[in-house]
Length: 271
Length: 271
Image 1 (tube, rainbow over the protein chains, first blue to last red):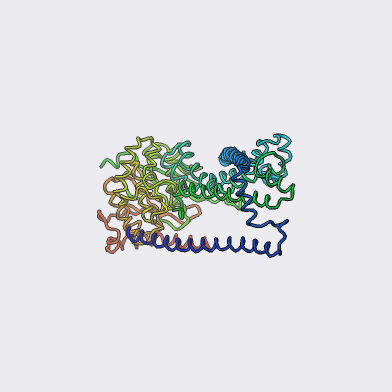
Image 2: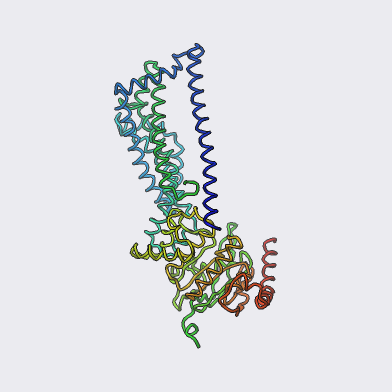
């Protein structure tokens, strides 16, 4: 196998992929325009009641007003702070628990039923009890987010450590790695790959925890803004809050994609 | 009498029996009272039908598997834990996918806490030796199967082991790459005369490479059936030596012995 032939093959397959991507992006934009256009059109023709459905132009205007008046920023800030804290605490505890249970068989077997039970519980019903325990401030939202993030990270860490290829483990043992070196060079990187691939889910969950917590009881945050708008039958405000949240998640997601592409560049298909 | 014969043998496997519990609850014995002495500096090939326990025997010599019965001595000393005098070249890919080629090659040196600068320079030398200079910063998935095998060869030889354990290392490669690798292996071995235990199910490969061929019986409860010295001249070219009359004669002689075991193992698999 010559090096030349190898590199030509890689270049060609990437070329075809890029052409495909441009088409897909154009089509995706088309779907967006069609959806927004039909919505706006139906409302303007009187086929959809703006009281229930609002209309895209009014929603865009609302978001614009929120932004230039400065009304939305403190709310957005609080929600992001809650989500970030939930993400950090949930990830740290999830990694620690995943490691402990993956390495100590007894722990895994003892805690297995409890973890399953707790994970099966719809976490939203914990919101009222967290508000009782931690009050209406950010702590109750962070707690709710943590219960969501923890399990995603926990299961992925556990899996990442359990699924290390035995050949790799034996190879590293034969190269005389100590237990600590094994952890550092094999188990951690393997778990990191799994944790990273779940990052989109866990960050999304952190935000869900924050917004749902705010919606149920708070005086600040995006969830609070949506709840307020709903209270005065302001459909435009509800939609504006929803869309704003989606856009924020989307932006965070794009950031993660970049980080992921760098950190997981060793994986096939990553480059 | 030369020095190699007066010194302690590189590997002494003494009366080793290995049994595994099958999922059905039976006890399946893989090796039955196997004894094998390998003197220092010899290239020994072990052949036998698939599933006869060749890899198990190698894992016992590597210290990856502690036999419930029997003992292993390495250069006269009883083996405890992994075999520190040996490097292992696995059949499967066992490189760390998250490490670059350079980092993978120097892994054994990193574990032995060699200063990084020295480790890097030795790893570069080894990469040049296996024909992979310029590929230091690639990740394993960016290389072809043959190139990954070269990295694995460099990874196992860089720690300068006295014994090399190889478990069908080239079986996944295409014929052309395989013969190149075999010739390169012989070249490296010729320079250093390390003790090699080379497992294969391909009798041609065994004769072309080795000083001595050991035939194992079909499992379960595999034993050693015969040992055949291979006194073909060195240096050898693996593709040319197959055409010589001495090679053919040896092949016939050993194949007579091996054929019965292959038939028995096939009959066993069908039953």
